[in-house]
Amino acid sequence: MGQCNGITKNGRRCRIILADDGIKYCRYHKTQDCARVSVASARATPKTNQSTVSGYIYIFTLAHLISPKPRKQGWLRIAEPSPDNVIDYTRSSEFRPKHDILIKVGYTSITPLKRLRQWKDHCKQHFVLLTPDTLSSVICSKRDKMECLIHEFRGLKLGHDYSQFDYQKCGFRTERAYDAEQKIHKILRKGYGFGKLYCDGCKTSSSGVHKEWFLVPRKDIKLVF
Image (tube, rainbow, N blue to C red; front, side, top):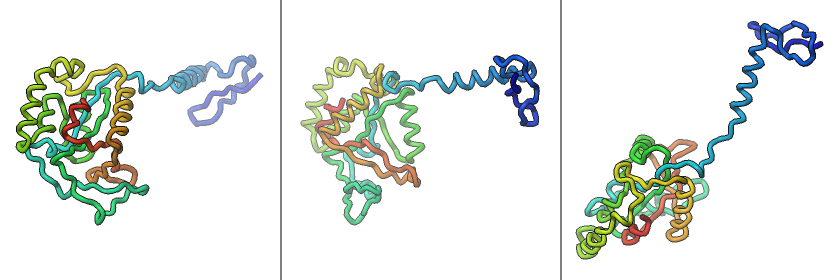
């Protein structure tokens, strides 16, 4: 014989003694046994494997970096990284956007447009998605008319080169979005290194440092796509 394992409304263990040792709950508390099984089953459910989730690969940058004549901004600066994530502004310099651009490549299981809206709300920055249609704005400026013209002629093949790009969602559709993102990051790190973006817009004691930003020459941006 054994005592019922049920819990009364007063928060105390039930005092009913059970005649059968194989039974753990009396007739008043047998539903608690089902509840325990349900909780255990829920906890045992494995988490979704990131690498198997389908979604989109998307690329974005700061809006002013794709203007026809991008200008330096005093708040956008380049500095050597530090272990404690503190920047010495006296040793920093303004980012020069004439020949280079800062981009971030990510993956999302929602639409890139919704994900970008989350970034904007979180960081308080004006981000824009890069698409095949905006490549000429990145590669060319009014100072580089010939290179821009050449790129426009090459752009006649966009339909073939970007068959996986969803123009409505503004991202590359893939069945294994996380794996694709990690492979892209690896390639970009090898070719261009990577940096941290110290964001004043969402800076707190536990965040405000965004990893995996890449400084890419504008002439190479087509290679990223």
